[in-house]
Amino acid sequence: MKKLITLLFVTFILVGCSNASTKTITLDEAQEIALAEVDGKVTRAVEETDDGRSYYEFDIIANDQKHELEVDASSGKIITRVEFSPAMISVLFKVIL
Image (tube, rainbow, N blue to C red; front, top):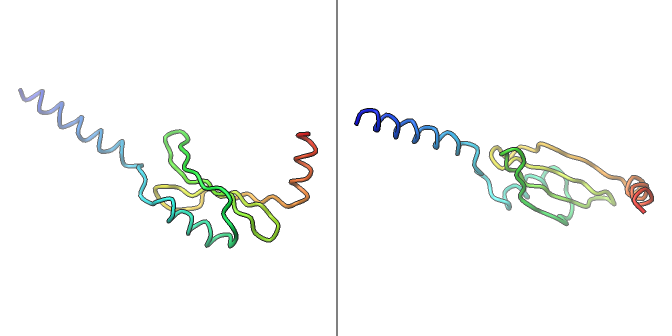
């Protein structure tokens, strides 16, 4: 009986620890964070999960440039920011086509 209680307790602790990286901010909150970094128009907003880490990805157009930002769903920190100038985008399209 003691082993069963101990096993249940350990399982409870491990399950609680595995959920420590769950979302703590909403998509709207993440969007506010992204727009504070790049003031523009959001053209795409999605939730992604990679290697067990949840984040929000945004495409923002500002000053004729496309910006891609990723905001960590747990901490609210910006984890990736990439800017594409119009010249870079036209080169990419030429390569693709």
